[in-house]
Image (tube, rainbow, N blue to C red; front, side, top):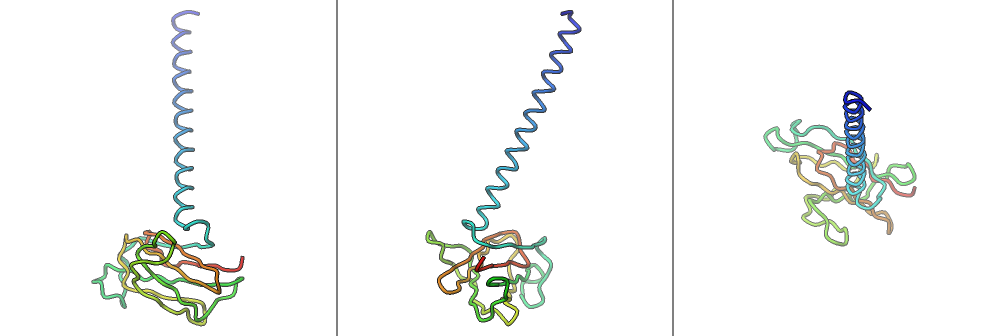
Length: 152
């Protein structure tokens, strides 16, 4: 092989190594994201959320425009559940029970429990129990709506 051919082969090997490294880092990033997303659901509970950036202002919250409101929607086999107590806390203990409770609200006829005056960027955990089945969801993403789904 001539000197020029050897340089071309070396450049191709370096390029291939960079591509493999980039692909490996991308896959690692996806893997970490999946682990974090799974952890946010607190052990496979059936939950989902939709959020947005914080600081949208909440007229009922009294935080000087630097708060947001959130609603937990509780369903059982697709049917909204009224009268279910939803606890909003800032954390859970080792057993998964709410600790540092902010508020407890009963769901309305549409299965909704609303919380106002929440601080953006703060970890909040939503918990509900129907019969002996519990659901919880913890997030610091300023979620506007959280679904706690039972009976799947």
